[in-house]
Length: 115
Image (cartoon, rainbow, N blue to C red; front, side, top):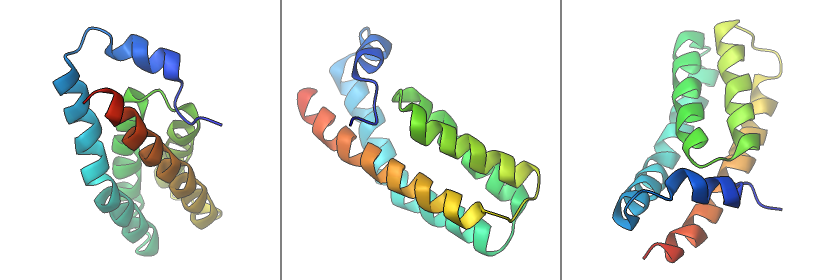
């Protein structure tokens, strides 16, 4: 099952040059590992303010790709940070990472269509 809503993705980017779409995809892929490491660090250090900020940022970037499930998981992680809620945050992060990893893999395939 696809993480990205392919039709909405195409609609979102239909007026963009292929190079712009490639740049957006490439930047996300390049920054992805670092973003996830930062979120994990925020969780490990119980830095809820930074967790809220970084999860919010990730949610916004994922929204560009019309990937509702990882976007919603990032929103839920953002809310854990906002509420300074430690319970369940590790499991939530693990699920987010799994879905976001799948997003990255789909983007790698999608990227081929824009080259």
